[in-house]
Length: 88
Image (tube, rainbow, N blue to C red; front, side):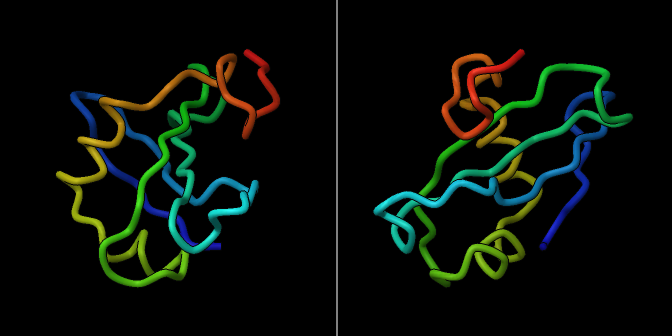
């Protein structure tokens, strides 16, 4: 599975495609943000529509760090997300 690590503020986050695939699997993806070290904060989910590749891993690789930062700003916490089972 494709994975990236980005810096947001003074924090490091691991970013990878969420495991859940919806009926819009080629039009919309979910990205999971996990604060490093893992478990130090609730995970976050952001959904996005790729402009380039329709492959989840390739589209993640095509996003710049700034674009990932923008997605993080609009992400939702795990307890509001069906992708993460509404858990905190």
